Length: 484
Image (tube, rainbow, N blue to C red; front, side, top):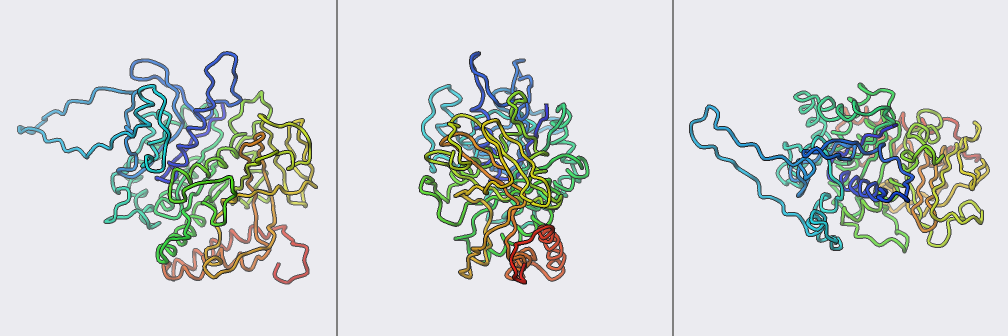
């Protein structure tokens, strides 16, 4: 069935994933005369509830800190069981049970449980990612890490090495892959891959890096896509900026080198198109925008085979990773308000249909083409222009008042088209034409010296330098400048 298993690490990734699962739920059809193009078995698993009824829950493992799940219960209505009676055991005295204050459900969740029309959500009513969740999860999917508390001022979960140490201590005690992931892998007939969503500019980056180590030990040839979510550092205090940049650099060094595809994502620091209105301080809003692109780009991986347009994670990766070591991708999106036909110059009415094209942009090899009958792609096609770019910008250039205006080189590109007035997204492996500046950025940025000690700085610089060099292979700007 080519199943995909999802790993969700941390609050921001869980916001992103909740939008993703809500979208998958919207694809379900409940009428005999309607057929979905989506193969739901790829992301959902069948099961049996506590009362013997059939269930259908996401193939996902959700990690979050204490207090991060909001009102979401580990045991939900599908698997509701009576709470066990506490036995006195060897203790002759009475048992004392201490409970945290219960987080009350918001009106939206209460309406869903009662089968009523839910009220509109607002930035004030969404306090946790579970507040707008519309699906049930299997109890094994919900993993709370009690060692740290969400938004704790006493023990903040901000330093990359904090997540590194937490994973190592938990894995030593429990073997996290064997306890949490393996049950979902073993019930898959033919696993297509794993998608890992994680924050990368805080402690979750260290946690994800060690998780990737274990994944590669156990599933060395499995496609693993990593969606690395970063916060915008535009209005962050200077010391926090340095910490976040250092965390991101470590994550790229440790995670990207092992991932089949590594896609960093953040809210664009530039002006958003006029058709986008969001509150940049709301995780609910920001993750919704990111999810629109992320969900659209991965849509081909879960289409039914008879639709003729399924592209597995491996197939999309091979298009983007041209030389075998270029596995960092840029995610971009446009929502065409008039007509999407301008992107290929044809006059077809493409509303309501999904079309995919994926091709190599490396002119040393033959262009790889996949298309529907309505869309034929040639190597001479222009790279589509997108007006929302989710790739994290170079913080030093913004702080110093410089912008890189040089044209980017595209090694491999995959584009998804989703009909008129719908999301379109693009991932393209890119490297700036100014490779000397790219090499300096990959080396860890001079400003990070305040938070990275000398010993680690050299190792990190070498690691990121190797990643940067991978994008020099086969690249030629065609200019006579010496700074190619």
